[in-house]
Length: 136
Image (cartoon, rainbow, N blue to C red; front, side):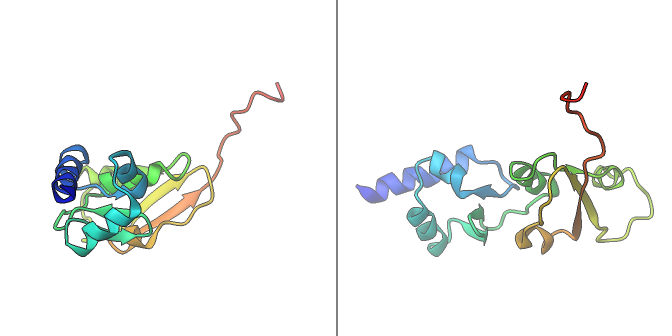
């Protein structure tokens, strides 16, 4: 009976999580998949471990959009820089084959290795404006 339950869990996982985007252990936990079961799914080939607590479906082509969306959950104010955003949408001309993706955010952070190994990227952090209303 446990095999049927596990089989139903992986079917639910395939149906509820987006393709082309990595997901975290917390996403798996919400679907009832423990860290031990996630490790088992990696061993049997139903999941691929990208990094610490980050997984994807085997054979999935990860998109920059899906990967950035996951990073936005971790880094406050993370967004794709203007020229990089235009390049992702195919607006720029004369692009190199692997142009560096520039990401901006409000907090100091480091891009994870699973991300930088797939996408040449750099992260810049700055607080350009002080939006607090404390002083006024």
